[in-house]
Image (tube, rainbow, N blue to C red; front, side):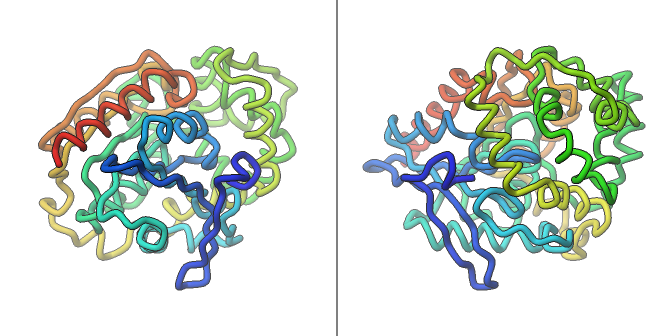
Length: 333
């Protein structure tokens, strides 16, 4: 959570619907742009801690919220408030409340990329550029069916990417993970990313892992202190909120207004960067690239030989790419 990891930078805002959001904000220097960094699931604003340190040093502004269900932000117990039709106006209002700049560079990772996609479609004027990490443009305009995703990934890749979703949306999924949170952390941040195929992607694999005493070696690119902070934040808030993002997508489906939007409203008309994670066994990377090439008129693809958590494992390259994007924005002014 913002206040635990960054006590001097953490702030809170109460929105018009009564929801409290925790966030980190550092203003930009001079004419440099501000980055809106949207984390995925399950993580928190802390997943961006390298960018929180480095982007302001380069003069860029940052706004890094704990999204709904995480950190210092409210954590509704039911999954209905986690629908995109609820999240989009909340984050849009937070940006308007905190920032005095008319545009931001939107950066999304994992489920944060989905939120960024919906924010862009509904508030195009807010963004000057978009950056998607690991996961590309994900605009939910049809029901999300985990079984279909499992089958599709098997047909394309030869293995499943999404079996874990079945646990995340189960009634006791959050409790199971909370009871095994240390070992789950070792799986999330595994030294060998291929273990995700057996224990995360394969249907039944995550349950098998949770019910076992299997220990996974942790990656060298995340320090014990970083791992401890990640665990501390999620243990304090629990996994009900993070898993509600998945439940809302599966059980609520898309909003009618999103289903009815014409295709041209879902094209991307601003410069877009996709940072592809080539050792990521939870996504179908080539499909995300192909989808973005059909939607974004000005697309750049950078392929990193890293797993899902590119901002950690590939922190130097990700930071360099973000600074390139920010400096390009200055040249466009």
